[in-house]
Image (cartoon, rainbow, N blue to C red; front, side, top):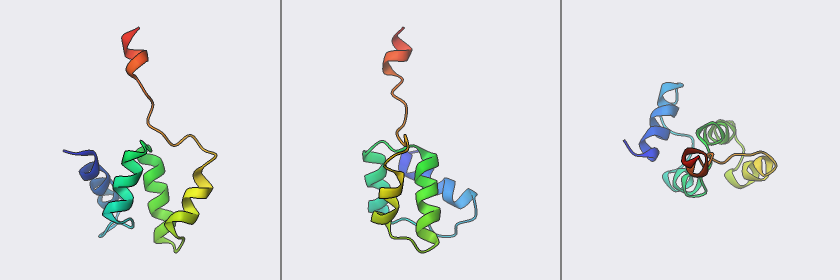
Length: 75
Protein backbone atom coordinates (compact mmCIF):
# COMPACT_ATOMS: atom_id res chain seq x y z
CA UNK A 1 0.00 0.00 0.00
CA UNK A 2 1.39 3.39 -0.95
CA UNK A 3 1.75 6.18 1.60
CA UNK A 4 -1.00 8.08 -0.26
CA UNK A 5 -3.33 5.10 0.15
CA UNK A 6 -2.41 4.88 3.83
CA UNK A 7 -3.36 8.53 4.33
CA UNK A 8 -6.70 8.06 2.54
CA UNK A 9 -7.36 4.95 4.64
CA UNK A 10 -6.49 6.86 7.82
CA UNK A 11 -9.08 9.52 7.01
CA UNK A 12 -11.68 6.81 6.33
CA UNK A 13 -10.80 5.03 9.59
CA UNK A 14 -11.59 8.20 11.53
CA UNK A 15 -14.95 8.76 9.81
CA UNK A 16 -14.27 10.83 6.72
CA UNK A 17 -16.35 9.57 3.80
CA UNK A 18 -14.21 11.73 1.50
CA UNK A 19 -10.77 13.03 2.34
CA UNK A 20 -10.84 16.68 3.37
CA UNK A 21 -7.67 17.28 1.34
CA UNK A 22 -7.30 17.03 -2.39
CA UNK A 23 -5.04 14.38 -3.89
CA UNK A 24 -2.53 17.06 -4.86
CA UNK A 25 -2.50 18.47 -1.31
CA UNK A 26 -1.87 15.01 0.15
CA UNK A 27 0.86 14.37 -2.44
CA UNK A 28 2.50 17.71 -1.62
CA UNK A 29 2.56 16.98 2.13
CA UNK A 30 3.99 13.52 1.47
CA UNK A 31 6.65 15.04 -0.81
CA UNK A 32 7.56 17.49 1.96
CA UNK A 33 7.83 14.46 4.29
CA UNK A 34 5.12 15.61 6.72
CA UNK A 35 4.10 12.95 9.24
CA UNK A 36 0.69 11.28 9.30
CA UNK A 37 -0.50 13.09 12.42
CA UNK A 38 0.21 16.50 10.89
CA UNK A 39 -1.49 15.53 7.63
CA UNK A 40 -4.54 14.35 9.55
CA UNK A 41 -4.67 17.53 11.66
CA UNK A 42 -4.37 19.69 8.54
CA UNK A 43 -7.19 17.69 6.96
CA UNK A 44 -9.37 18.24 10.02
CA UNK A 45 -8.67 21.98 9.94
CA UNK A 46 -9.52 22.15 6.23
CA UNK A 47 -12.69 20.14 6.85
CA UNK A 48 -13.69 22.77 9.40
CA UNK A 49 -13.41 25.58 6.88
CA UNK A 50 -9.81 26.72 7.01
CA UNK A 51 -7.90 27.10 3.75
CA UNK A 52 -5.00 24.77 3.10
CA UNK A 53 -2.43 27.58 2.76
CA UNK A 54 -3.63 29.23 5.98
CA UNK A 55 -3.31 25.98 7.89
CA UNK A 56 0.23 25.39 6.64
CA UNK A 57 1.31 28.69 8.20
CA UNK A 58 0.00 27.51 11.57
CA UNK A 59 2.06 24.33 11.38
CA UNK A 60 5.37 25.94 10.38
CA UNK A 61 6.60 26.14 13.97
CA UNK A 62 5.86 22.47 14.74
CA UNK A 63 8.07 19.52 13.78
CA UNK A 64 5.80 17.89 11.23
CA UNK A 65 8.33 15.74 9.39
CA UNK A 66 8.81 12.02 9.45
CA UNK A 67 11.91 11.14 11.43
CA UNK A 68 14.94 10.31 9.34
CA UNK A 69 15.89 6.94 10.76
CA UNK A 70 18.64 6.29 8.26
CA UNK A 71 21.44 7.44 10.55
CA UNK A 72 19.80 5.98 13.66
CA UNK A 73 19.43 2.54 12.05
CA UNK A 74 23.04 2.51 10.92
CA UNK A 75 24.41 2.81 14.47
